[in-house]
Amino acid sequence: MMSNYVCNVRMFRLLILILPINFGYEVPLLGNCLAIPSFLQKFGSETPGGKIEISTHFQQLWNGAATVSIFVAAYSAGFASDILGRLLVIYIGCILCIVGVVVQSFAESAMTIFGGKLVSSLGFGLGHVLAPVFIAKIASDELRGACLTLINNMIVLGLILMLGRILAVPEAAVEQEHSGFQDEASYLDCFKGIVVMAYLAQQSDGSMFAAAYLSRVDPMAILIDVSFRQT
View 1 (cartoon, one colour):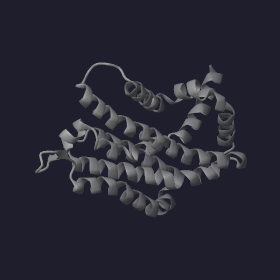
View 2 (cartoon, rainbow, N blue to C red; view 1 turned 120 degrees about the vertical axis):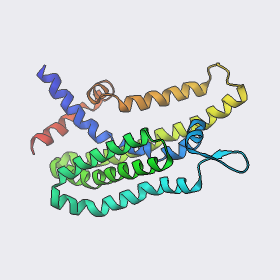
View 3 (cartoon, rainbow, N blue to C red; view 1 turned 120 degrees about the horizontal axis):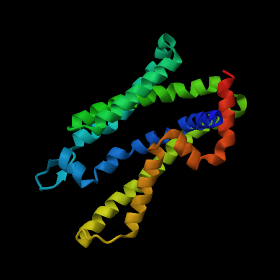
């Protein structure tokens, strides 16, 4: 029983370094939403030509929210860590990320999305500025470079996953329009299923996901566990 618990703790610590995949997945998400008809119906407005689209004003606000929040976080993270402590600021960043994501998920207006994106990006900025410094402090010399590299690589992997979704959604919409919304399965349906399963896998329980899909990296998890125990 204890050995299973220790293994899950090791793999969960490794999974923490993989979680930046969520930020990479979220960065181009709003741009992808502009191609989703239901999103346009809820947050868009009708143009003089009869088309429904998101106004340029809101698009600029949404895209600028992340830039502004990350800039503020990068400027204030050092001062906040000196006053409150590095670990506490990271916890605050995690809470801000969760709050911002929940607000965006239940948003009923474009300005609510803007506010949620401001909050979540501020939380990510605090974590992304301080987490590498914290890892460099507690990780061993052998593992420090691998940990920092894993964080940045996971952000890129998240961008790649979202790219697949961006390619799938417009093509699926065009195909449904041409086929008259027939119920036939197609290669696009299979591709969308792969993207959905990848998203569900990354959001699933930490220990179960790690045990099922990351068993080959157990040596790295052990090194992380040893590094944490040395602190």
